[in-house]
Length: 265
Ligand SMILES: O=P(O)(O)OC[C@@H](O)[C@@H](O)c1c[nH]c2ccccc12
Image 1 (cartoon, rainbow, N blue to C red):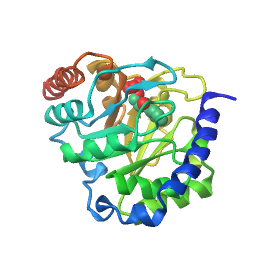
Image 2: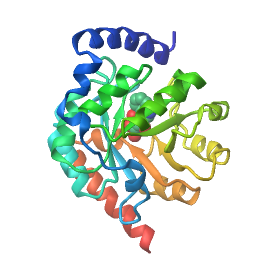
Image 3: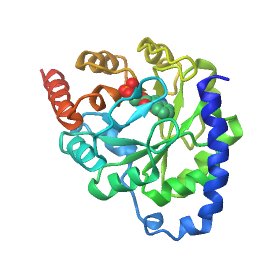
Image 4: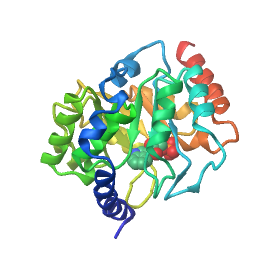
């Protein structure tokens, strides 16, 4: 079993347990469930912002512990202040050390859109995303069939959230559907952990022209961002590069200055 299969197998059990603890009806009764959320798409398209989606990630299966000390409050408020277009918050506990409360905390202390970063395979998790304050959900094409992708996407839109669909291989483009607002290309192969920015470039040319494009993972330098911008990318999802430092918000603030300066030069 590759790591992605392991994560999905665990997720199925987790979702069953969660649904027993808090029912879908109870999720719908939570205060955030009926609150409007800012648009991820709108924020990424805003030329006054950096296009960067900064990610709060404590650990990952490929890197182990990335940052064991950072607090959500400190990091995400700093990210917002430095010009982050949106936040990505890992809510998977078992493999990424996150939790739903991390996202709700981020929602409480910032006003930029938040992507729920998790392995969504069940409608329950879409209700949960709304109840914890997400603007958008991640759908990973590699773990969904065409019908699941449609059903989960339609539900997210119906509940007032947007969908970022993550692709890694050309044959996954048939999972795209009208409910997908933003397409993300993961430079990291989730089965082998190999990272290659060229992945974004190759796949980008096969995508519908009308969707916003995000490049995800393995982005380390302002040059990476310039390279991706030149190749038609609107957004950049960056986690480890900032999280691995002792002050992620400050690291992003420096990065944000560098990409702003070069863009205007
Ligand atoms: O830390 P990085 O290399 O900058 O990557 C961020 C993000 O793209 C990565 O965390 C990610 C991309 N797709 C995912 C799916 C699930 C969990 C995590 C991810």
